[in-house]
Length: 231
Length: 110
Picture 1 (cartoon, chains in turn cyan, blue):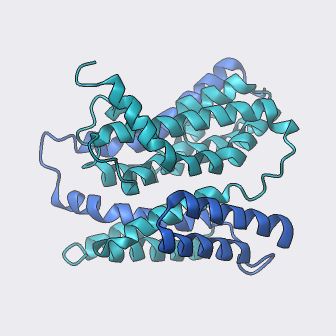
Picture 2 (tube, chains in turn red, brown):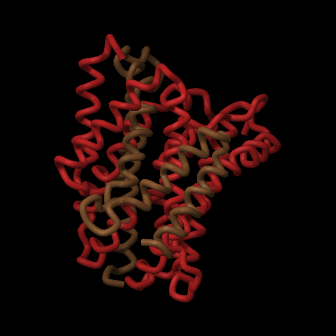
């Protein structure tokens, strides 16, 4: 590949590693659980890793387990995974600018645009002197690797782990809180921060915990449309 | 396995297709040849903070407010995260500290 240096890729991975540590810890519980549930359905570690490497969508992968146990229904699976991941379309809109000049990594960055890479791309600062695309690649690549490795490990170890990991997944919540605070620090961002929290909270209260994301996204669009000359 | 190998592979393909459509759509729709519409540019500016807010609420969507521990462990641990971050602005310190407090609370206190 032209215009890409292996050395810079390595620098990007090294620079991204510290900010991805919370994700690694945050995923221990859910990754191992996923592996255990998959092995309960008869899928070994290689299957879990194959799902993770190809799908890379934790929430949907977990939702797919009972659906697979119920029988073969690819159409329902397709529709479900589109709607469960519908928010990713908004992530894409939010990252159009940042991901503009990221060739040749762009297809991979889009392929793996889950919650965690998105929030790091939005809030984490690429190091000085390194083109941001190497940093974006580094953090996406690392999170992608963690997910595949942890879900694979879960299928092997899940049953024999004795260390009490209850509560470890709070690391993800904590990470998102910090990334949110970084957005909040920027005064111009505050109205949008408030819209995001308020609309989602309201939607959660009205629609319940399983279907509130789509109404929340729709509500945000309406508010941003109405406030397009003010916010 | 309830499904055969072929059925499993088709299932994976269905999940990949649904997920990838959601991720590629904006990049294909606004691929740079024409100028991105003003409203979409504006969304690109306001959505990052708004979506971080959405993700934070999403994390806590199943916290029981009216029953059980009433969300107290989550509240305390979140306060630890916020206060330590205001104090030191160190991501790993806040995430590590908040998580440790949360684990101690749910394992030993509540």
